[in-house]
Image (cartoon, rainbow, N blue to C red):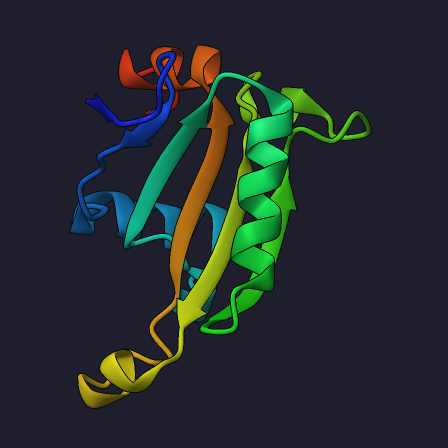
Length: 131
């Protein structure tokens, strides 16, 4: 479900990654190294234009409460989209570090924000990115 954003973009609400999918990803992608699994908690924001996506990316990176762990840019022209069956986004692994997250012990909890164009979000919503 997409929420917000004027012309079709906005937040695409996601569920927490299931234990079965998390286990599969740890085995298949990370050679049993569970510390590499960074997208259990994730959300997607869809944009109508690349310019809007870049503006959001800058806002996240420049936010003083956000610590960026990794940015995976699958929109880069040099990215081999064959590795992801054509799927493209900008995945940001981050944690929010402020008094509220510190109070709840969440100031080092890594989550993922996926920035993508609405065209990809609609394909993903139709289970196009599921394994």
